Length: 88
Image 1 (tube, one colour):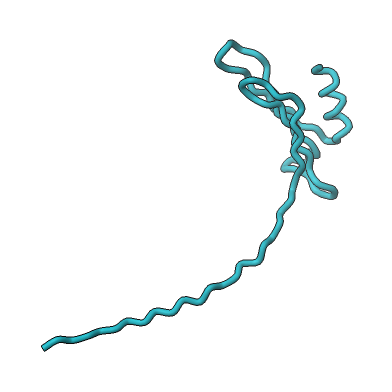
Image 2: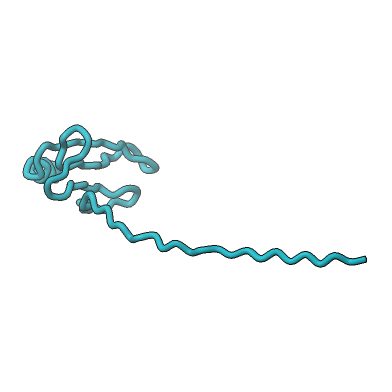
């Protein structure tokens, strides 16, 4: 006696809508051998946590194998560019 069992499975494919969450622009200020100095700028009418409009992540030389990471936050983008001009 043989029993044949057939299982039929149907799957519905749901289309997930593409949502673009653009929160910030990223600018590379200086390319280094180990790390890149980057500036994160919030989009219009948006701010980062703490009310900052720009965040600068830059590195200073420590030794040949590593750098020291610094993070500086700015309330305005203008102040961020002023700080970058002083770094150069």
